[in-house]
Amino acid sequence: MRMTRYFLPVLREIPSEAQITSHKLMLRAGMIKQAVSGIYSWMPLGLRVLQKIERIVIEEQERAGHIPLLMPTIQPASLWQKSGRYDDYGEEMLRIRDRHNRDLLYGPTNEELITEIFSSHVKSYRDLPLTLFHIQWKFRDEMRPRFGVMRGREFLMKDGYNFDIDMDAAIHSYNRHMVSYLKTYERLGLKAIPMRADTGPIGGKYSHEFLVLADTGESEVFFDKRILNYNFGISELNFDDIDECQSIVDKWTIPYARTDETHDQETFDREVSQEHQGISRAIEVGQIFYFGTKYSEPMGALVTNSEGMHVPVHMGSHGIGVSRLVGAIIEAYHDEKGIKWPIVVAPYKVGIINAVMGDKESCEVSERIYNELNNANLEPIYDDRDERAGSKFNTMELIGIPWRITVGPRGLKKGVVELTNRYNGDRVEVPTGNIVNTMNKMGDCILD
Ligand code: ATP
Ligand code: MG
Image (cartoon, rainbow, N blue to C red; front, side, top):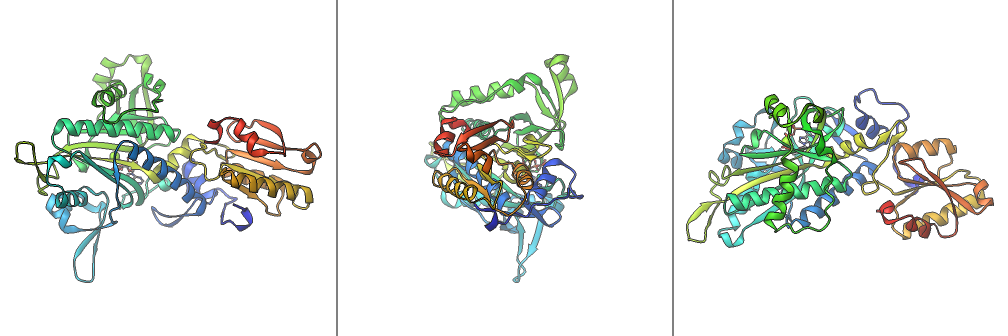
């Protein structure tokens, strides 16, 4: 992308309405624009990050054997009356009436709709297990929308739903989700800790939330600090292997880790010695539930089992806050100059700065490098604007591009450009010859 042709509405001033770093940086970097309280437009740069996160979430769900579909944002109230949640959900639900006086709602979650889809088509245990998921906008009329995309009213969520023949099978689905979530967060560069949670309006018996420690988080959490040394680190695993999934879940859930809603000081003191007790603020980036037949019974989602009896399916649901993750990643990756994107979600991987726009050779070399990187899929963003070099550096740092190539007459005299790493500020001079090769030689981990 060339900056002269892009739409990157960066702000010079720190917006006064933003209280936390990620919100400030998202506004300053021109990633989002508020439409009305808790509802945002995603500007081109923000959209690229959002889509990269989405892609990783989808890949990991598919790897675990879960099937994507897409349900609508608007749902009929009648389904929620059937499950009994229409009245329970309260003011958070946006209720709408169409021209025919039919009651509709903007979905805050999708248990009812998916249960109806399932029960219309699946009748036998032979078609189980089944997990369906989608990534779709949700609306919750939050009492206090704040912190930008962290607590929006309209927000993007991955939500998945498993259907199993009995509790044992559903617990395996629960475990499989926990494992796939741990893997997803790790790929995104986040350390998310599963914590025992309350089930809230979703209901059910088992639930874990995934929390990323951050001073600005809205949850208070209590945990055994040794869990911070855990790394998921498993690339190959068999999601159908019940024991393998169970052992990963055991490893991650045995240490004490709870949110304030389930925290019990006595148990904490008994299980975790003082020196290992951790208390922190944290951001909830996902939650998984097992709720048995809570929806399948009232909504008639029955299948025949192997003995020919009609039984309600056992279900669970699972959510990842895709748009909230953008903010959570920034909270974990920034400095006083701006964002420092992990390469996997960076909107562009390499920024090219042409330091002296009037210099013919600088222009030619910048153009050539830009084309080479584009062809090699290294997603360059080229600052070809007629601006001071200093201001270009500031923009590139603010928007968090992991690598920067600076092209200027001084370097070109020696046949080099400067390559700078946004994480640690390391700089090296590299020959203008074959930049793609040079970057590839620096290791796969750097570029993907
Ligand atoms: P919270 O406790 O933060 O209100 P929740 O427990 O009601 O969230 P879930 O139903 O578990 O939310 O939704 C799954 C995920 O969606 C959450 O873990 C969170 O990451 C994200 N999420 C929920 N509400 C919002 C919101 N208002 N804005 C942005 N993301 C949200
Ligand atoms: Mg939750």
